[in-house]
Amino acid sequence: MTKAEIRFPIDGRTRKMFVDGAWVEARSGKVFETRNPATGEVIGRVPRADEADIGLAVTAARRAFEGPWSRFKPFERQALLLRIADLFEKHWEEISQSDTADMGMPIVRTRANKLRVLGMLRYYAGMATAIHGQTIDNSLPGDIVSFTRKEPVGVVGAIIPWNAPTAASVWKIGPALATGCTIVLKPSEEAPLTPLLIADLMNEAGVPPGVVNVVTGTGPEAGAPLAEHSGVDKIVFTGSTATGQAIVRASAGNLKRVSLELGGKSPVIVCADADLDKAVPIAAMAAFANSGQICIAGSRLFVARTIHDELVERLGKFAAALKIGDGADPTTEIGPLVSERQLDKVEGFLRSGRDEGAKVVTGGNRLREGALAKGNFVAPTVFAGVSDNMQIARDEIFGPVISALPFDTLDEAVTRANATPYGLAAGVFTRDVSKAHLISRSLRAGSVWVNTYHAIDPALPFGGYKMSGYGREGGTEQLDEYLNTKGVWIKLD
Image (tube, rainbow, N blue to C red; front, side, top):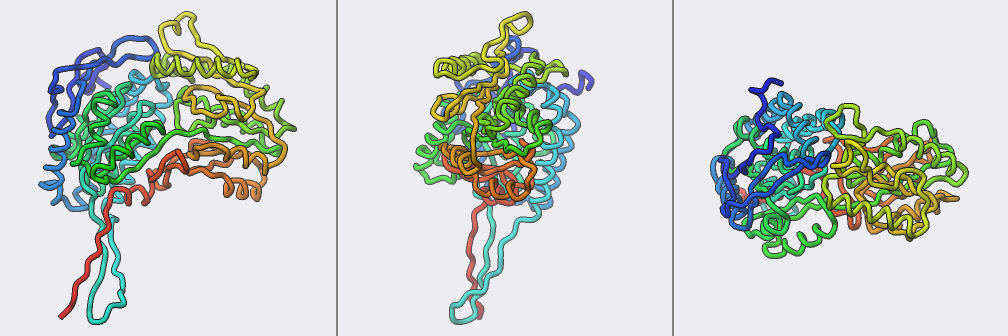
């Protein structure tokens, strides 16, 4: 990539946010810093929006929804999404570097997300021309034709987390454009830079003013007003369960539609017949990928007692060999935690595990030596001797921590795996196909992976059970979340 192609260099400059097709400052003039979590360096400053700024963005989105955007045909929305995908592909290296600098994800991982993100955009492009209602025979007397129409829900407020800025942005914006909605996106204050770059690419692609707005700010000052705003028809949120509950309460004002993808404490069950050569690296990275900062992290590892000791030993050796460092280094496998606040939280869990009697097999500490001293680094950690009632086995950590728990029977493993308020994802390792079907059917989770993990495709729905939220992202189910169904009756003469 040449310097001329770099749209948003990571150089500490002050950015503006994107509202109604223009780059604007916060009405208050306030800004906040975003830092590289590997070095502590300030890499940008962005507007600190508040309720007034949210109001302007929602007004712009409503005006666009009721104006020219409403007259775009499905083919035109499809063509727009394909242009966006082409621009993403052209600027993918800059997008990758932005994610890595802003939230620490290793560059090898951000680069590898290309297939998924481009696939999402092109999937949504295809779906834009596949939205349709049904003609339904009714039983009323006389000649009355009845059918349904699928119509965009309206203005969408989207609030995304910091752990995957590009994918999270596209997961919200893509279906909004495909269905004919407009959107106000509020990225996390921990990683706001890439969503602003995305807004610039969408503007170049020809997204009309007001259709996509990106407003930066904190949760209380910008996220809460967005969730409460009476001009927002739908809120889609990815983040913590506590914040999701607050959004549900805030939505009551105008009974706006809500989709929530929330926390998890995902179990991974390793059966006695599992292929350990395959299970060990996959189960390890189920929890360690992105430094454990993934809602689907497989942090509860239930292991058949007959293989428990061998698997834990091998898991510890695998974890200890992972290369930890600045995500900008292409050889880095484990990057930093996103912030000092998240680092403090994870260190608290590590102390809790030791205090409650769990055994540290490997890791268990912050890394402070050499080039890692200024960053938010924690060694990938494996705990053994864990019981189900320990905090590290109950609560979402959002750090690179695995709790190994032995089991004796499959019924016991499934019962214990389900004994959590969460239900986002789960994993199973077995060579027995019948066992795979039986266990995957019994697990109360929105996604179950067998002999793999982290497999996500645009055509398949993704979402949670129980306190992990409701609504789906991906598949035709996601498009339905952005559409209203209208019944139409026409009496014939």
